[in-house]
Image (cartoon, rainbow, N blue to C red; front, top):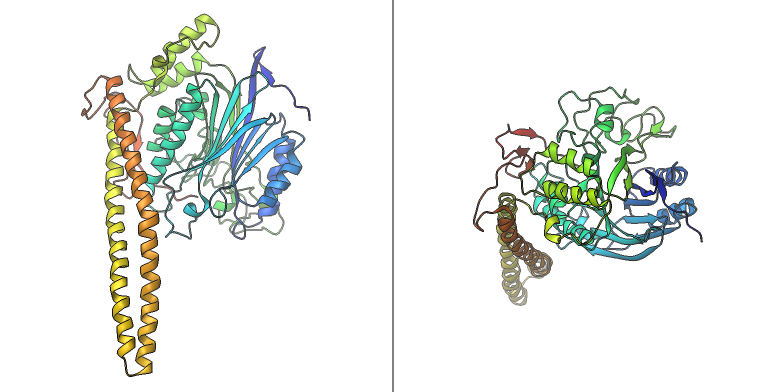
Length: 515
């Protein structure tokens, strides 16, 4: 089976076309699943120029994957469906070039089994990893993921999503330090100013492709922004008024319609040390004809959007761009010791040498979160751990109390002179046994494992904080590093609160509810 060589830009600099999309392919639940996924498959197959790497999320049904492979095998001959959890992780990677290695890394913190209607714990969410051998001889590490959604206005899953961001950031960091072309992509269920976004883009040694190409993009859409601007200028991929699954109108609205809820949840991260962004856009915005969908949820005027998310499409140049990183650095106004500044220094050296070299000291590329942000994460972990430890103790107390109650109930059955009373006592003992047993299993197995994962996360952060404090020139117990304009999401209110450490005004936006 032959494969085409890499597309060319700027003479002999190779580039790759990358595609990512949440397909919303839930079996039995997602309406018009087969028709929508078939259309997505056809559009991927017919894309011009063709895609070199495709990453999909929420493609749960293996039959849909087989149909995808049948439609796209001529342009993407290599593919992997990733199996995980009780019902699968819903992650797929397709490639024009051979996939030499693949693995499925499951997140240690990934929802709760008690929230069975949400399913995150049961699908075993994680990172689908694929090492692709590019024709240039370079290894491209593709990391496809779908982070835990908030679900609630008071986001009780923030700690889990933050820990997941930390885990994929470690994988990205490792790939970059090995000298590989690292690509982290998927539905991250986060907005650009969030804590998870800062963790990935800093600790992962990667940059948000949209910001690399459009460094002045505001983190939050200005008031009265229309849908077309949200998509084309701000990269909104979810909750757009132009998506039929997010509207209740009988016909498709105008692109100039005000779009207060549109947001960017889907990302493609790249390693600026080895790559730069040639082009990026939000795709798959055109709905498919579906005459049965005249209006209401999912349809408008005989059309149906392909998913409740739009896609992200990137042309990635396999060479760093000093100008691109300088523009991003200036837009962020980083600290003198921050990552972007260090990358600019390294970029200047590489520009003078006209090539990427591994002889430059690794310390030059080190990136660390400011200690103040690490303290915020530690505070988040501490508060969540207290909550979970209380529930852990409560469930185990219920379990041991149930054992005592069962003994008493069985003694009552033995001595009861009336069959009706005996029956009632047996019924109550059955209820006590089931509920106590479930709480015992949840407490011993799930919550014990969760508390250990939280402890591991906390200890990793403490070790990391020590290194960060040295890099920023503050004591290991220092509390703040001034100068960073990156806004962060806190979990102290019903709404998301974004603070800037340089004294900028506080901005408040509603926490989103999206899967």
